[in-house]
Amino acid sequence: MRKTVLITGASRGIGRETAKLFAENNYRVIINYLNSKIEAENLEKELKNAGCDAFAVCADVSEKKQVQKMMEEIKEFTNHIDVLVNNAGIAQQKMFCDTTEDDWDRLFNVNVKGMFNCCQAVLPGMIKRQSGKIVNLSSVWGVCGASCEVAYSASKAAVIGFTKALSKEVGACRINVNCVAPGVIDTDMNKNLSAEAMEELKESTSLGLTGTPRDVAEMILFLSSDKAKFIAGQVINLNGGWI
Image 1 (tube, helix red, strand yellow):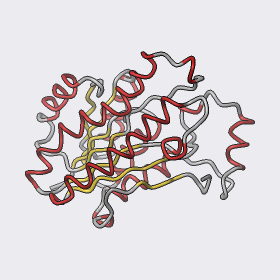
Image 2 (cartoon, one colour; image 1 turned 30 degrees about the horizontal axis):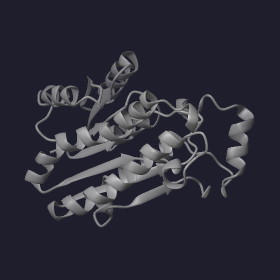
Image 3 (cartoon, helix red, strand yellow; image 1 turned 60 degrees about the vertical axis):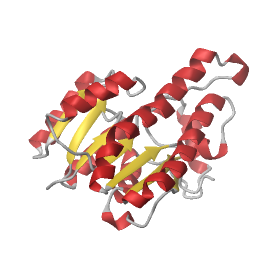
Image 4 (cartoon, rainbow, N blue to C red; image 1 turned 180 degrees about the horizontal axis):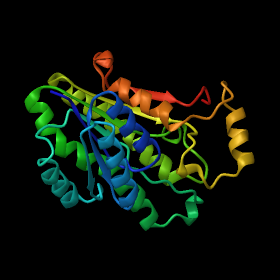
């Protein structure tokens, strides 16, 4: 039986590349999206044309009821989820003293509560089968913090703490929970940075490179595979030697 992966925020960037890579490796792929309906449906069509079982489903992962509804819709596609990739996330650059309570709540609702909701939705099945992989997406800023990104950094640091704690709780059920903390990746999230700023960031890495969505997708796939069966509760710093 082919394994099934659920990827949140899979219509663009890292999520999209991850969906394509899992499809290439014979997984059945569930594409979660919120606002990018056309992109998600085009990806679903692309994967199906390539011979992959794919299913695009809309849900705001920060809303518990929407996640529950998503899981009901997924039951029409599959009765099990082997891998959960918590990729959906948002960022914000803002001085701390200008950060509003709404700003703070929005970042934590998507970046942390969304992960919480999705993990609670898939874990009962994984525990019953005594098998599963969960990969959470943090950030280099969740590791070392960033000026003018206090709320974002705090939310991504919470992802790390969540990962380490949940790994200890469900490890006995043969469920591996790990985290990837990307550095500067060439995605829409960094489109506000100038070419000069991106070049400076690239030169600040020991490799002299910025990352690609494929680089992150490859690590997510590895952590989801049997090759990583003895890796649990880890934070993989995928930043080209930046820190």
